Each structure stands twice: as structure tokens, then as C-alpha cells.
Length: 98
Image 1 (cartoon, rainbow, N blue to C red):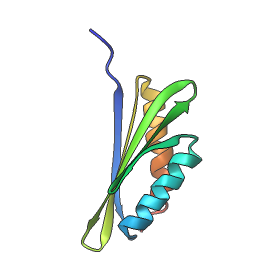
Image 2 (cartoon, rainbow, N blue to C red):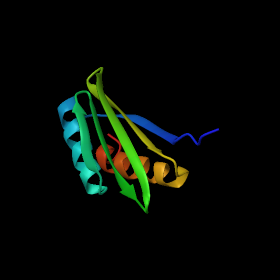
Image 3 (cartoon, rainbow, N blue to C red):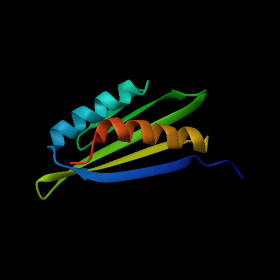
């Protein structure tokens, strides 16, 4: 049986537009040290290495009732790296609660 990647998911809503959320997600991916590898609104993704482990993230930004639902998914064969990728991108992309 081959090892499957670990998947970490986090989501919330913010008082910002979808365009602002996607811009913030793109910044967050780069700030985390990853490269944007996929950009097709309402999704943006990136990949790279964190602490020696390959990781990928996908951020989805969907407008809902004047707010934006933001979901961040981090994946890696290393559970800690998947969690770290998700947490770093989520913290930067979402910013403080609004």
C-alpha cells in the first residue's frame, strides 16, 4: 500500500471582496516561500518545500452574502508540513477576523 498525502483544511469568511481575497492568497503563497503554480479564479494554488518536505496548497475564495468564504487546503506526505503550509497561508491570506 502506497502512502497517501496528508490533507489539512481550514476555512472561514472575511469582509473582503473575492478579488481582494485572491490577491491576499497570492501574496500569502509567495510569503510562505512557495511558488504560485495554479491561478484560475476562484482558486489559486502553489507548491514548494517547507522544512525539507514537498507541499502544495490550494486556496478557494467564494463570495457569499457580501463576504468571502476562504478555504485553504495544505497537502504533503509529511503531516507536519501539510499543517504548516495550511496554517501559514491561511494566517496571511485571511488576516484578522472581520
